[in-house]
Image (cartoon, rainbow, N blue to C red; front, side, top):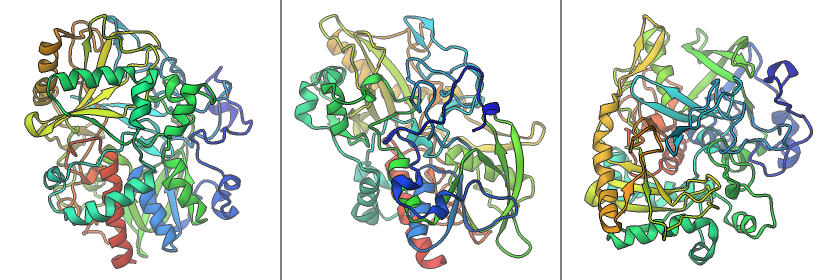
Length: 539
């Protein structure tokens, strides 16, 4: 980036980059041909065989598999590359000290947990193309990753495969056998998912909070389960031993993780770039896709600077286009393209079937004899499963404040049936979402099937100081947006937009609102399934 692009006082330096720091690896690190790495941003007037819009889970799978099949791919990403350390030597900032790198084009932070001890904790920051987008709609704030690697940059890395019994309600048009025999294993291998060593979990200080969560869950008769994560567990053990730079144990999660997390830049994207057939253009935002007179599609792309300003507008052509901008990004773009006449023949299911994966947060105040620890790993590794009886799966989440809080904190995924729709607002020139805050009540009721019982058993109460003044439930947000271009409705059963041959959806927009667990493994596995068929049949 140029010096004119940075906020004053940011002190971004170009000196090298941290090995293994969660950045997009350069050509030398991957040994890839210089052509892909040195290609630079996509050029105005370029023609590409495949354009992938977005670099999250679905887009990364598509790029890798297409490249392995011998197809050249160009990926465009609205966010930054996240490959250059700041003046502090780190690429990402700490959760406890958010700075200009934390939020996408905001001048004030908007943390999911935005109060502590009843006091607001958000702070002013310079406007910048930071890593976490808190996108506000009328009834909900949707948190999304912004940068090469998409949501993998900012999530907790919980790589959960849904129970097979739940799968027919998640993706009813998909054969469970092929998913559980082939594509879920392929996705978990590609993502590098692994489970914490139970013996180490039982002994380490940094998971005291989760052991308290286990004790309380089991005493109330709920199954406590370890779940895989994409963190490097060997690295975390070294963090605890003090032999490497702390990352998960330094509270790094919400605004990126500098070391141990196996985000997409270290897995699918690294493999894709190593083929020499994949180029990536960060800070590029697609605004239009229309059929080209000569075949394929004309794509209009705005190039951004780190203030969010458009510095150039480019027109390129692509034989095929994959929409992989995430549930919200893909849905908003398709709804706008249909309504404004760019792609008028998209069907009427586009924009429908959006859900929040039933997300709701809460905290519990424990007794003084149940401390949860001042040192907490920011990477969750366990959950409480009451899905079959109460419609809730609760992630035992960290509260890495750096001090003892005596608090247990949870992100629940619930079987909330409410679904919203994206629609074009011609008066404002924007896409609206019909979600209503009151639609969170089923999620709260389902979460209460766990926590009311635990509180009654333990003689504890809900924390009321984490989401406002005397507010128990974090019911204003989702971390898991899903749907808006639902498989076998807005698309065919493999993500094709059938009215426009060569256009595909391959991300979380395909999944109708809920996965019963953290969704990125399912998004990845579905992308593996769909791209295999698309390569075999369409190419």
